[in-house]
Image (cartoon, rainbow, N blue to C red):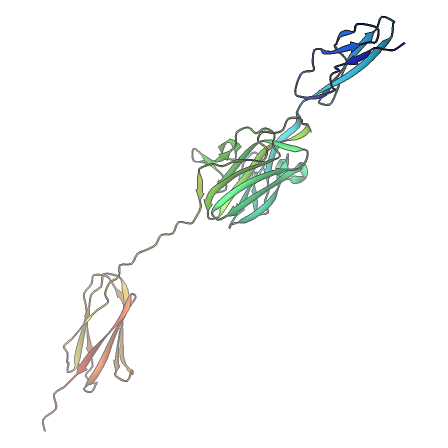
Length: 346
């Protein structure tokens, strides 16, 4: 009256991306029969979303007609990603591609200075209207210490299969001298990714105000059994971006500002002679030793290389020491002169 016992029964397993077994084996034993090997084949095949199921039924009957039945259910799950689409990140300071005459939607984002910026990633936002799509994640742009990193962080239920990043000094990349928004023409692009939920492009050496376009192809994760080999990975290009404004420094050759004053001493007139290798305004001022301005003469049209001689009438000045100050755009110089007239004989 005792039923046989099935031993070495396989465990019910959930396989990942594998075919269901063609057969399973077990053994049976009994208190009044020899027992032996058992073989079960898949039956009751069924499928639920991305998982296939099969039952393996083992049956053993002893010599007395007692029967035992054991069922092992096996399943095999596959990765399934659906509703894949184009995604772009959108910062506050952005320009829609359509506004600049391109025939596809997306945004180029401007960052005037270093900082950390977390911005939304929209999938399927046709016409640059976020309400036409869905926010599938966030992109964090970290611009610090002369380096830029672009991190994609997808929301639960979303993954991405590729990332295209443009970082440049102008709004858009160019091809053959013409602006383009085709993601394949961006300067920092990953290879195909194994449906990642997090991935970083960078750090990339950069300087100055920059534009960033962050593009991805995102999908909805329906089923997943394989771990992504690329998740939380990093792509670090060797190229750099230099957007510092070029400055042209004019090096002015330092020249001695000097002049001649003669005769010294003088009686009535003094001659001031000068010549410079630069255009400048020239002013000549004459002071007494108490700092009182006696005379000022200007030359506002001096042309470089010209020898100028200016004769100044100082016949009304009593015998004394005077200071001549010559003022140019590149410096000021002072010289001492002396007025000395012969005494009149009685």
